[in-house]
Amino acid sequence: MKIRGFETIKEYQGKVNLPVRATEAAAGYDFEAAETIVIPSIWKQGIGNVLKAALSHEKLTLEEKLLNQLKPTLVPTGIKAYMPDNEYLQLCNRSSNPMKHFLIMSNGVGVIDSDYYNNEKNEGHIMFQFLNIGLMDKTIKQGERIGQGIFLEFLKADQDVTGGKRVGGFGSSGN
Ligand SMILES: O=c1ccn([C@H]2C[C@H](O)[C@@H](COP(=O)(O)OP(=O)(O)OP(=O)(O)O)O2)c(=O)[nH]1
Ligand SMILES: [Mg+2]
Image 1: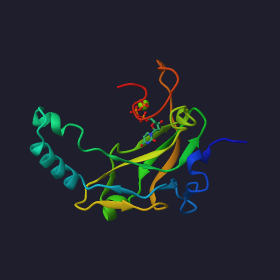
Image 2 (image 1 turned 120 degrees about the horizontal axis):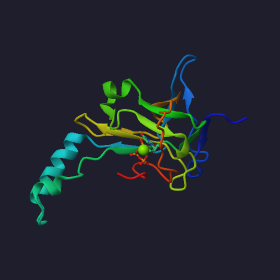
Image 3 (image 1 turned 60 degrees about the horizontal axis):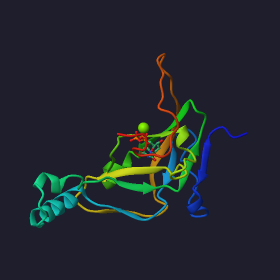
Image 4 (image 1 turned 90 degrees about the vertical axis):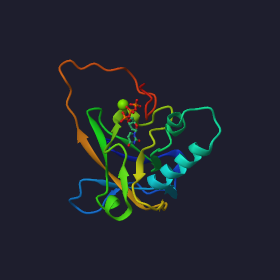
């Protein structure tokens, strides 16, 4: 019987490992990067963008030119997760990521809702979003462990109201 677990996204069949817990008592399932990807240093990205904006001839204010220039990088995992509808999967950073690689999760923790699984937009593809606060760009290699996912239960309020069915992720339910 299926209760909660992981499956591979179609596009990544045969290319990624399902998450595993590193030790017998580990709470988190470790996720690997599905692709080799560069997380640019925010400082290099920032200074580069200030220079680009200063030198560009577009008729915009500097503020407009700089808007949306520092973006977190989405790291694909090639994994989707299914679970009962009173549970979610909490994505957390690895403790070693900031210390060794200056990588922080830009959203603090990630919340993977049960209705994200197999959604029509991206099949429920789980992504980690990172900012690199180090001075150098960081390359994450395919197969490198990037973060962990913990299954948790949540409670509902007496005044529980919902907006209906999920169609995607990352802002799909509106502003
Ligand atoms: O780090 C994350 C955070 C979220 N998600 C996916 C799963 C989650 O179910 C969906 C929506 O996340 P959330 O509700 O936190 O973001 P939102 O900005 O409110 O988007 P939406 O409007 O789609 O709910 O995006 C990830 O893959 N990684
Ligand atoms: Mg949401």
